[in-house]
Image 1 (cartoon, rainbow, N blue to C red):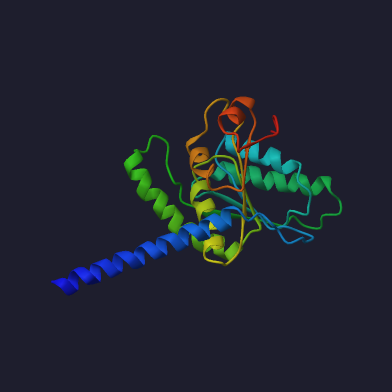
Image 2 (image 1 turned 45 degrees about the vertical axis):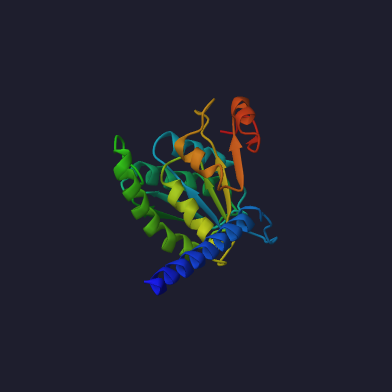
Length: 220
């Protein structure tokens, strides 16, 4: 019996050491924002349905071709966003004669949460989405993740964060809160406020509540 309790104590001590090391590694990853200078940056964009897709594409209009290739993540049932992304990329290529062919790809993952889905079941669907997100994020290994609030962005951003924690690659996470959020953050924003490298808000009221955020005015 004494040996059993001694084994439990050693196991608990080992678990505590691992937890501390992971916490330290997470701190290092979150406070390391240096990117190696390069001619292009691989960009992973999380597009939600409806307004989220509209806003994220407006943000991309102002980005140069240095952000290439562009990988889009959408929910597996979101056909409208897929059509809008294809249309956006074709229009972008038409405006820039130097572009031989648009360098982009659309990837799909299950939704973290469907409309009116219960919060309890959302935990399991989010974990399932995260389970599928990590291999995809590991395959892409983006330099930068850009998102603006859809539930799909949470497992993607956590997967990108894991790449840094595991020492595979530091991925910069940029979160832009939706223009619709004037005084309160979205649920995704409340989660990723603590995990993103740059958290951008578009209303001064949010800047006052969250001093660590970046206020740039209206950008979409």
